[in-house]
Image 1 (tube, rainbow, N blue to C red):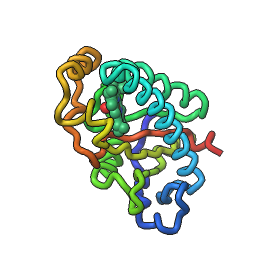
Image 2 (image 1 turned 180 degrees about the horizontal axis):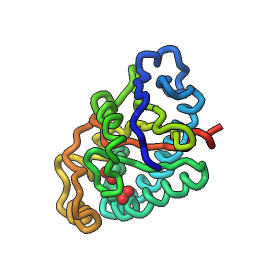
Image 3 (image 1 turned 135 degrees about the vertical axis):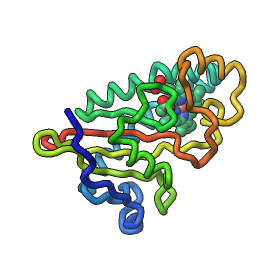
Length: 199
Ligand code: HEC
């Protein structure tokens, strides 16, 4: 499928006060229900991965955490894609996994999130838009994944322990996903589906 350009990119934060706490702020171009269902898929991704990550960190420390992330993050994305019929994956402007490198048409919206990762209520911001036309039209959403001091700093921060760095280098020789500070955009969860199959 060939993207033909972004027709609408919108930021929802201006209207955030009118939406209820669990529903993401509306983005022009996508219905609230479509944003909410993409947001629920992003929640699922985060919940499943953080359960695995926290358990691995507790039981085996950061090096075990890297092994688990390397295996589980792509597996959870694949499982959710299959369960939901949407394409689900993580992307980043400074990726660890080279597969997280955003295609050109995702870079503008990702930079938009990077400039302002949180909405006015302090929640990860979401942008949504329609890409392509007719039978090729796809509905895309990105939701911010924001850097925290803990536990993220251990593997993405400015001061990485030598054994952790060695494990990163072993799995991801091209890694550029360190040096982040709390509050910065670490990446985003992409949820994409064909418009025709989304209703
Ligand atoms: C134990 C080390 C570790 C910790 C702690 C950790 N990560 Fe990661 N992170 C990784 C690894 C390894 C990958 C690559 C996973 C893959 O291959 O998909 C990754 C990938 C990512 C990605 C996908 C984009 C990319 O660069 O490949 C995001 C977004 C991300 N991490 C955010 C976070 C956030 C936010 C936190 C804190 C809540 C966090 N990570 C904590 C190791 C870690």
